Image (tube, rainbow, N blue to C red):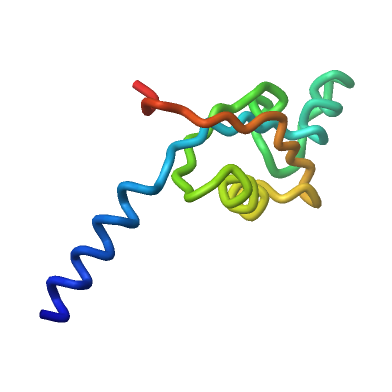
Length: 89
């Protein structure tokens, strides 16, 4: 019985999760690239937008996950978060 309840809880959790498209770039890398230099840690492509898919219960949770993965103290900027009905192809 406990096993069935655990599965039921997981099913409800899975159905309430949403996918969010997060647009992120690195400001430090962008400034280095514009100056004709290279960042010591990150590739030049971080000067451009990266589109990341995050699964979360809410936009706020998606933002928190994004901030955790792409911290502002390392130059990352979360530009936009938008709920997505479908995943990336």
